[in-house]
Image (cartoon, rainbow, N blue to C red):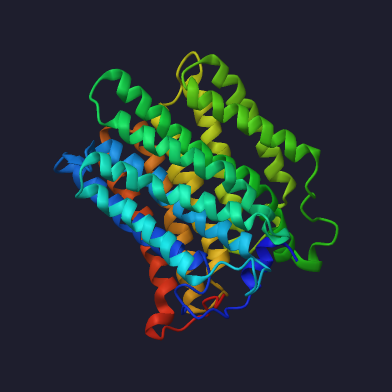
Length: 404
């Protein structure tokens, strides 16, 4: 049994109740509600009343909360669930009180910076990723926690980038703005690399399960040396995009990464699928490839596309769609025909539509604001719908929600 399958199948025998019975649940529920609410707030600030939020310009706050607020919560829920899979109630299990403390730190990092002095809010903001890294370090001692090693590097990196992002966002100079943009790209790249690393094993595994015996020999290619080449190319393309987004080097490296990872995606045989929740994982990886393509075109000598398009293809597109697809696979049993299954499928359609409108906005200057508002509305609606699906058991709602 894979680590992912073990995380899904693990028993619910915790005393801390349904909400804390599995590490993914509070973080997926919290992240979904946060994504559903933070984007409309940003749209209101941008379109109606531009003000400072949490000591930062509204645009910097929006970028900070989506990259360093939403993303780490989803990462924590996923990696902590995999790290604790198979440990049972013994020495390696993650108790409900630890999950509750981590979740409290995440909420504090989102709310306290709004009302406390900047220095205090900045300190609170970095506590969550550092605490998650500490828990993953402890869990990594157990054989069942192999996947936790991703977080041992990524969460400290997110903490450092989050701290620097808030500090540089405090200023108004051009150098500060450039550094804030660089750090935003760095945070997005962390999420993109996680998609490439973890998704590179998860997507073909779930595709193989969805195809079953009917696919015969037409199954996803196993993890081989080509996957390592794809990851190296992805890393090189993203590093170039973070450091020199307008340089010809980014045009070359990001373009090569897009082509290699497109070949990787084709090897996973997603075109054979008829199951939308599994196909959504392929769609999320396709957004990653689209983001690399747009980054390459934006860095071309002719600047063929707006730089903003690449940024949102990787964030609202790749990260937004892939995180929703992964959360749905881990947290919800979305069988076709059931109320929950229909809701999850609608959420998948909405999040892709929202990302598409957001990426299209800078291409159509005259319709920029309507496309921005429409994209944000669809994207947020997708996460609100998924939030409702997850909390349905609290109100006796029908449809199977995973009890792990």
